[in-house]
Image (cartoon, rainbow, N blue to C red; front, side, top):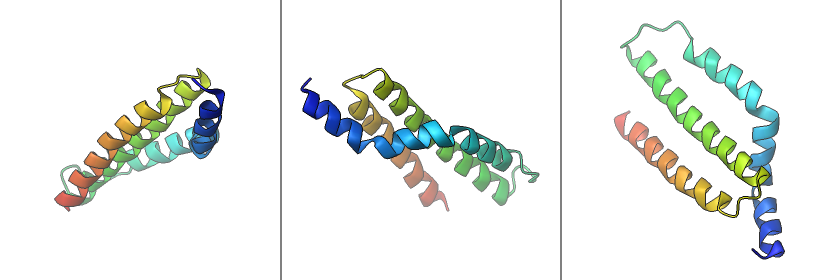
Length: 99
C-alpha cells in the first residue's frame, strides 16, 4: 500500500484512535453504570435502556476493532470499520423505528 494512503487513512481515523485509547475505561464505567441502573425489567424504560446499552457497546466495539487494526497497520482497517458501522447504523434505525 502506498505510504501516502496509509498516512491519510491514519489521519482520518485519528479521532477514533484517541477515543479508543483515552476513553475506553470511562466509557466502560459509564456503560456499566447505565446497564446496572435499578429499573424494573420489562418496563419501557428498562427496554429502552437495554437497547441503548446494546447500541453503545456495538459502537465502542467497532472503535476498539478499528484501533487494533490501525495499531497492526492492517490495510483493511477502514473497510472493516465501515462494514461494522453499517451494522451499527442498521441497529440504530431499528431502535428508532421501535420508539
